[in-house]
Image 1 (spheres, rainbow, N blue to C red):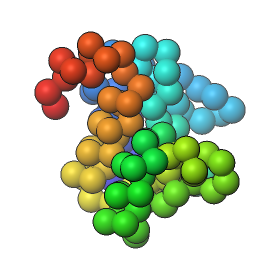
Image 2 (cartoon, rainbow, N blue to C red):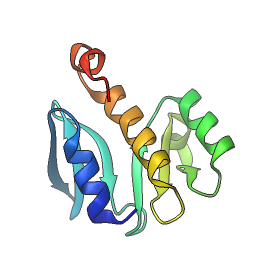
Image 3 (tube, rainbow, N blue to C red):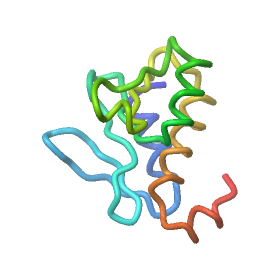
Length: 112
């Protein structure tokens, strides 16, 4: 998936918006960041999942998903390689992160 295709995917989620932080595109829901595009490399996305979700994804997709280093990694942050992941994986992981950051009522109502 290209960075532009990821941007379209992220912005297609309910109440998602785009902002900028330190020169990088960030994606928010209800003011909470669910993804950073271009970190730590232009073709990667940083997202925060639960530690359990992160562990499962790193085990099943090690070529595309890596645990972030240090304390952030221990809290569930991961890096998704857009060039290595298939579109279904990118969509699934993006929705996981979006749900984790969306207001509970909005997340429950989303069926995508």
